[in-house]
Amino acid sequence: IPLPPLTEERRRELVRVVKDEAEQAKVAIRNIRRDANSDFKELLKEKEISEDESRKAEDNIQKITDDHVKSVDDKLNEKENALLEI
Image 1 (cartoon, rainbow, N blue to C red):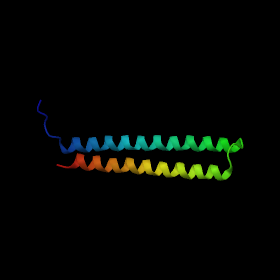
Image 2 (image 1 turned 135 degrees about the vertical axis):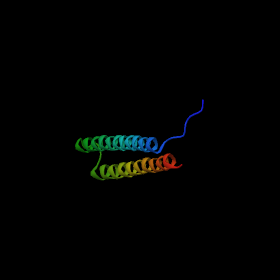
Image 3 (image 1 turned 90 degrees about the vertical axis):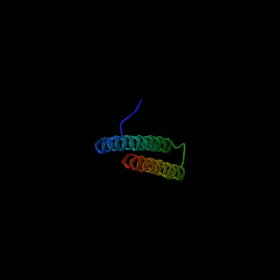
Image 4 (image 1 turned 45 degrees about the vertical axis):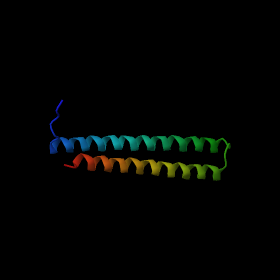
């Protein structure tokens, strides 16, 4: 089945869709971070972990979050460049 080449308008529309999906992925990552941090705060409140352990866990969670958000951004840039390439 022959497919016609993508028009510039359609490419830009696909880029918008990809950006929306990337933003949804980043929001999901941040929600997971928020849930994990609240779990650690609850453990701290119940005295099951120390403040130092809680701080280390939050720092580690932030690092993981940053890594995943960067990965999403990198993939977004790759896909955007691929879509706009003629």
